[in-house]
Length: 175
Image (tube, rainbow, N blue to C red; front, side):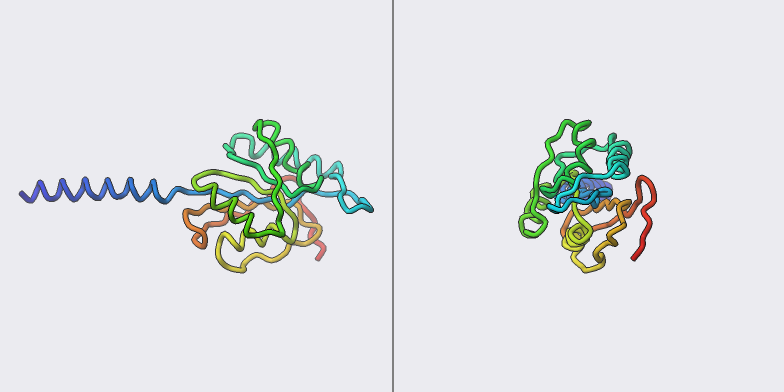
């Protein structure tokens, strides 16, 4: 009788563990700031040669990663940063509005269990990370900071793990 109870409890534990794993799917959001930009009086510059090289490096380091979607703000510099990766993944770069954080969070919440990438800006990328982790840990980046990549993994908003890495040539931080 004791053996039957132990077997039943082991089965129940295993079964509830499987159910728990299925209901707590991990979502991965990868965030980058756009690569080095040129100057444009209209305010929508292309990437510089250095920025183009960084975009190619982003493709190189992430080409083996599965992505369900790639998002960018509607500016040339953010789109050009992820374009090489999107091309190799055969994905369309989708626009998002970084100033409508409710819409950004809707995108993230609808990607439960998936992996998505956001290409943003020095002042908006940290805001998205903070929304996911549920605290104000990340501040605006320096205007000369282009080499950070943030990998945010979570099953529930507010309970996330963030891995910070650098890619490409080291950015000189001048601030």
